Structure formats: C-alpha cells, structure tokens
Image (tube, rainbow, N blue to C red):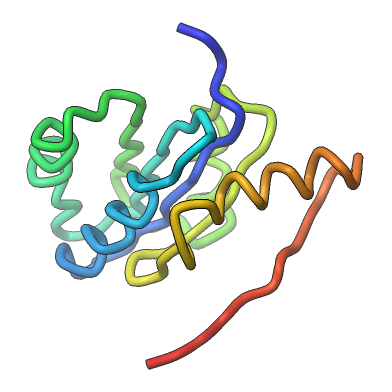
Length: 129
C-alpha cells in the first residue's frame, strides 16, 4: 500500500456517534487526495469502536486506524497516541461534529502545505450553527 498524502486524525472523547458520523462522512467525500483516517479516543466510557468499524465497512473504506486509549490522558497525549499510528507526512486534526467545507477541502489544504514548504500550516475556518 502506498503511503497516503495526508492523515486526518479525529480526536474523540465521549463523543456523540451521530456527530462523529457526520465528520467521517465529510472526510470520506474528499476528492483528488489519498488519505488515511486515525481515530484517537481518549478513554471514553463508550468509544463506539464496534459502530465505527461497521460504519467504515458499510462505506467500503479500509484506510483507518482506531486508537482506543484505556483511560483519559488529556488532549495532548490523545493527539500523540494518534500521531504514533500516522503513516502520512502531514496530519489534519478534527473533532466530532466538525466538517470539511466541501469535497476539495483536504486537497486544497494539502496543496497549500506543499506550496508553503513549512512544517506547520494553519488554514482558515468557518464557524456556524
């Protein structure tokens, strides 16, 4: 398997499954980019791991990893636990309930990273209810 261009790390803790599915759907519709999804759960009482695996199976998506931490360690350690499983050179962190703007967001993000030649890149965000 070729190395993906970018990883999307979804950071969870006692997350609402429906919000998580909205987020995952916004990732799965991304075009023109090879990506992997890392779900790093920070010791949730119910990590929904079985439901998440079924979701990916139903979508016929295999490039994902679930990191189910046994206990809550805090955001930074949760991020690190997910980063340890990333195979791509770049990572975009996202939370359940957050969504990409459109089907080209990840591609556009990756293109900007490539142009900037920087180690860290921040993009614009759009917040709404």
